[in-house]
Image 1 (cartoon, rainbow, N blue to C red):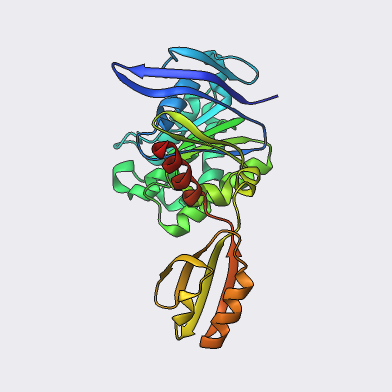
Image 2: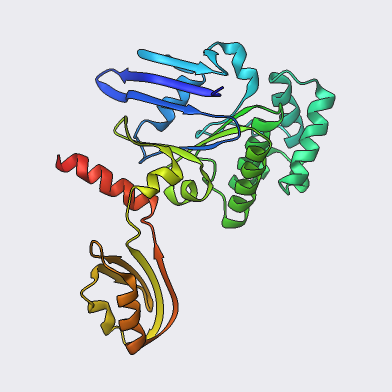
Length: 300
């Protein structure tokens, strides 16, 4: 059964249409990306999903039944707007938040210590929130969203404020949770992260669905006409007729081929002029697909 199902959901604030006829489903054991530019309607969709606001039309179902507040016991939510008590010590805060989700203090404390060790912040346990870095606070709120062992985990811009090491730690944790059968939704404008992590996506722009479905199926609709080429030496091969456009970053070229071009012809020309250390024909990135799709709609 789907963990989440939105059908033809619409939300208007005054004269602003925030969400316009959005539908998608999220299955158990799935990493789902809700993505789009800032202001596209991602957070508004999440707020309707968990009952912070009510849709003007359409339906929201959690765990195969119409939304009710009791379902939230099975949901973990990391909001985009962070909210921790600055004067409370970390463990006191985690235990309190765990109790709000129905845990007793002893269980909440045990789970919080385990999670602090997993997230490599045991040194923060005796400190007050205001004494910690933004990234450390982010990890504490991440833990708070998971203490009650939710089946649906919703992360709104979860990597904001994290350095690359901690972002990787968070990514690995989300992958582990998916492997445990949890449904993980994360909302972001960072399409490179979605491309690496997600099984399925719903990409929205100006409140409307632009692309939706399984990641592999979506990408298979587009030709593999991108080439990443690393070289040293003469770059005159970049004027080869198979190239539609390119960017050359000091010997690291990102190339778009003309329609139906054979990348092998470009490679043969390149080795005549330069030493090639990498040549890879690739599908377009999710960001390129998004720009192309939105541009087509605008032109239409």
